[in-house]
Image (cartoon, rainbow, N blue to C red; front, side, top):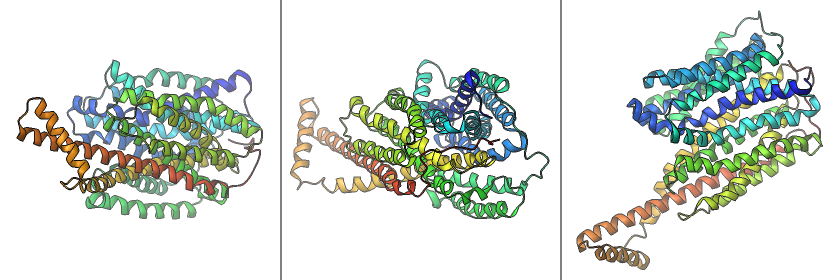
Length: 515
C-alpha cells in the first residue's frame, strides 16, 4: 500500500539519504588515498585495497539483497544495514593500521550493498504505482549524484581537516537515517523466513563475483595475466559464475532468482545498466585523472568542476519522472541521454593543454542532463514487468550490473590509457630528429632561452632535450585521454539500439502488490 502526505516524503528523504551514504563512499575515499598512505606508512598498492575491498564486498551483497530483504523483512534488513554502515564508518575513522582500515572498509561494503537495492524497493513501494517514474527519478538523485560529488566532498574535507573525517561525517547522517527508518518505514512480510538457506549459492556467488571484481580492480596494476593470482582469479570467476547459475536454476530456494530473466525488458535492462555504469563511473574516473595529472588541478578544484553537472542532474531528475508520467516514452529519453553523453565525450576529446575551468563547464552540464535522461528511463524500462517480490530481486541484480559496468569501465580505460600512451609517445618521438624543421626550431629556441638565463651551451642542450621530452609526454597523454573519451562516447552511442529492444510502454507502472 502506497503512503500519502508528509510520511511519503519523509520515507523518500530517508532512503535517498541512506543510499547517498553508500554511493558517496564509493568515490570519496579515492581522493584521500595519498594522505592515508603517508599517515599509515603504506605503499600505494596496499592502500588501494581500501577501494578494492569495499567494491568487492559491495558487489557480492548486491544480488543477494532481494533475498535478504525477503528473509528478514525489508525494513529490518535496511535498518540493520544503516546501523552496520554507521558503526563501520566510526571504526574506519579510528583505525590505527592499514589492516584494520581495510577490514572495516570491507564491513562498510557489506552493509552498503544492502542499502542501494533495498532503498529502491522501499521507494517503489512507498509511491503510488502511477508515479513510479517520479519515484525512480528521486532514487536516481543518489545513484547518479553520489559518485559525482564524492570527490568534491572528499577534497573539501581534506582541505580543512584530516582523512578520518571522511568517515566520521557518515555518523550523524547514519543516525538520522536509522531513526527515520525505524519510525516511519512500515514492516514487510518475511516471505523467506523458515525456508532453507542456499549456502552453496552464497558461497559460489561470493567466489565468482568477488574474484571477478578483484580482477577488475587490481588487474591493471598487477599487469593482468602475467601475475599468477590474477589468472587464477579470472579462471575462478568464470567457473564460479557458471556453477552459480546452474545452482540457482536447479534449487527450489535460490538466493538470486534468475527466473526473472524471462522478462525481455529486464534481461536487456541488465545490459543497459552495465553500459550506464560504464559511462557513469568511467567518465568520473577519466576526467579527474585528466585534470589532475595533465592540467595540474587539485582534487578540490576537480571536484568543484564536477559539481555544477551534478546539480544539473539533481534539477533534471524530477522533471524526467514527470515526463514519464505524462506518457513520453522512456526509450526516447534514454536515447537522447546516450546521444548527449556522446556529445559530452566528443567535446572533451578536443581539450588542449591550455584548457581551463571555463572550457569544461558546458560539457559537464551536458553530461549532467544526459545522466538524468539515462538513469531514470533505463531503470524504469528494466523493472517495468517485475511484480511483487521480483522487484527486490530485480533491483539487486540491476544495481550489481551497474556496479560491474563501472568496474569494467575503469579497468578497461586504465588499460587503454596505459597502452595508448606508449603508442602515441612512439609516434611523436618519430618526429624528434634533425630533419624535422619544427623540432629543430623548437629545440634551438629552448637552447637560446636557457643560454640567455646564464647556462652554458652543454647544460642548455641537456635542459632543452628534457623540455622536449616533457612536451612529448604531455602531448602523448593528451592524445591518450582523447582516445579514452571517444571510447566511452562511442560505447554509449552504439548502445542506443538496445533501448528500442525493450517493451514500448507510454505509461510504465509497477503493480501495487510489491512487498
